Amino acid sequence: MYTMKTDPYRHQLDAWSASRDAAFYALFMEMGTGKTKVAIDTIGHLYERGEIDSALILAPKGVYDNWVSNEIPRHLPDHIPRHVVRWQANVTKAFENEMQRLFHARMRAPRNEKVTGLGVFVMNVEALSTDRGKDVALAFLKEFPKNIVVVDESTTIKNRNAARTKALIKCSALAKYRRILTGSPVTKSPMDLYAQCAFLHPRALGFDSYFSFQSRYALIVQRKMGHRSFQEIVGYRRLDELNTKLERFSTRVLKKDCLDLPDKVYLRREVPMTDEQRGAYEQMRRQAMVLLETGELTTTQSVLTQIMRLQQITCGHLKTDDGELRQLKSNRLDELMQVLEEVDGKAIIWATWTHDIQQIAAALAKEYGKDSVAKYFGETVDRQPIVDRFQDLDSPLRFFVGQPRTGGYGITLTAATTMVYFSNSYDLEIRLQSEDRAHRIGQKQTVTYIDLVSPKTVDEKILDALRSKINLANQVLGDDPRDWLAPA
Image (cartoon, rainbow, N blue to C red; front, side):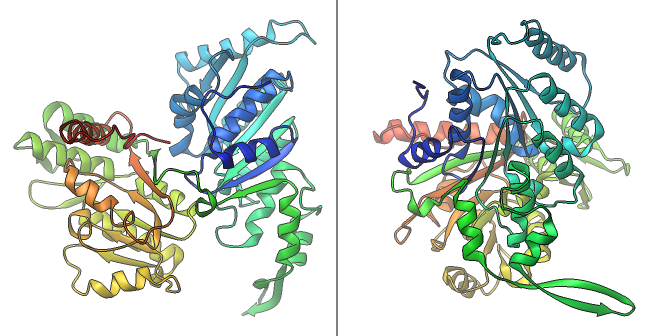
């Protein structure tokens, strides 16, 4: 009998009970409801039953490190021996040694004899777009056929023509058990479902090809543009039938239906710095100055200025001493867009820097339409209409992009249950006030808070400082300790 290391919520236990022995299954659980724990408990359960001895976990860049450093240690029972290896894009001696240990330790066991210990290989799903990543994943599955393959945030494989999707379909053929995890399986169109479900099983939805699936559920008209003719999807049909098919191999969990969730759930998405950012960051950190490739010099006159400069670098830009703004290649905006693709309903995005607010709003307008986003910062003149439109559930305004120092006080934004911190400040009052824009009277659901963090940078230092301040405040005021800013 499998014993969980961490106590599940009722909805997690229900999802695990329904899915734990299935050859393939989809956990369509909204962000913040704990789908990762369900997947890890499934891995533990199948290992203890002798059904699997290895797991390949694929997740986006901002998530896969979290499986290694937080999720597996937190939820996988301590009595299960494991060897966890994290993928590295750059070939290093340490990584090669880890892979050899993983392969050799398990290959020493005689054939047909149970291998002691669970082998876990965690990769970022983007690696499957490369030949090396695809080859290593396939080699792992071929060597250890008693496996499970888990795809976290499976909307990353919704494009059936993408190299990573094609590679993952090949992995699926070598997988004994398969799982996909996402809160929003349909981000733009019901057609998003085909590739995700094809990974689970070639005929999970009952079709041999995408085009037969499309013709069943999409309304298509023939268009002409000049001499070119093409098919355009103009609507959808038989969606009740499609939903019935999905229910056979999936569980859908929404935050609003989880009465046992805490009032606030904190998540963290890691954003690796680019080489350009890392170089500028290290120079700034060590020398309190950075010489940009353009030859312009940026210096720091105080510790606070240095911290500000370091944080700007993690966000992907830097202001030089002559006032010029220089853009640095960064993954942060891409990670934010990935996060928001997984979110249902309205969302609030807080950013410290005006430049970031402008960049975020432009990206959202391009992706979702100009009416989907509004900016709320120092230069915003007509502010109340923005709040009114955001609070109107029938309004197309979905994303509130604001500066917490401006928008973090005195307004109500309870239409949102998701809040993303693109960046933070050291000011505890600003953080708490901004959190309470959505978590206040009128909010009937759990609010999920997501911090974008570049590991081993000032981002982590700021969160540590905020956590220390809240703990001190609790001690002074005699409040109960709060699990604040700790990832769920």
